[in-house]
Image 1 (spheres, rainbow, N blue to C red):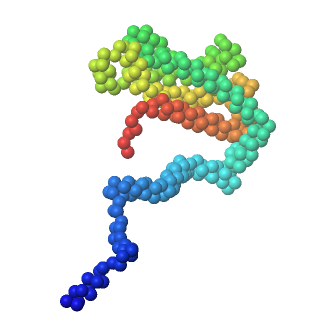
Image 2 (image 1 turned 120 degrees about the horizontal axis):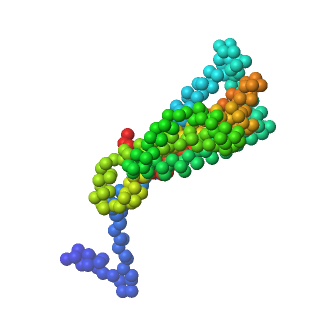
Image 3 (image 1 turned 180 degrees about the horizontal axis):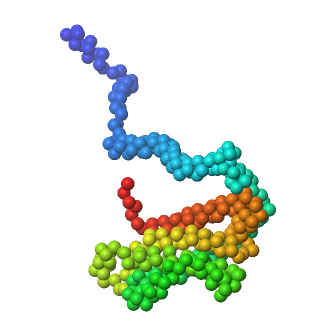
Length: 312
């Protein structure tokens, strides 16, 4: 009895006293949602390999560049060492370092720029005129049978006539000025563009033509939307060939009759026995040809960007 009373007395609160607050239970951490953890993990996974991926990409580019330039570097090393070791007569094939010094000398006194400018104006003028003439004519011959029947025999005659064989004819008819040189470039560049364009139009995928006709496309729309885009890759093969031909034929023409140009520089250097300067002119022509080809490749990729790249 007394025990019970004591216990009850302990639990009784005195009047005016504040009852002590009981401690709140500890809050357990809320587990993150699966979507949040998944998103964070994916973001971390994307961020983590970014630096190594850039490193690997840079390494691949460096390796590809080294592989592509290995043969050129080996050729230049052979060119430098062979004359110095007496494997070839350095009078006729000086070391590459001497040719580089001669090239720098020609560039410093302005001869290289003047002659290169003259050649580029002639080459690009003839090349541009050939493109403007052959690109529209090629699809007409390749797609329209009456045009092919009319011009086919004439094309067969002239396509088998070398451009340089007609150089005396151009000089007799047009004189020894710029007109004859540009005309010979136009003639030489026309055939690669024209023949490749004709072949491209005639070999368009028949499935594409059937699909286009099933959509009731008119002949002009079919030509514009299907024939021309499908012909771009093969057409640009001819254009790139013409770009190389424009430089080669022009240099040969400048060697015969010109007062300026890279062909004139090479011929004059050989005549004056300035052999390093002669090789400097040859290297300049090669560099211009490579740069011109890369420019055309870039344009081709831009115009044919719709194509799906081949797997692998």
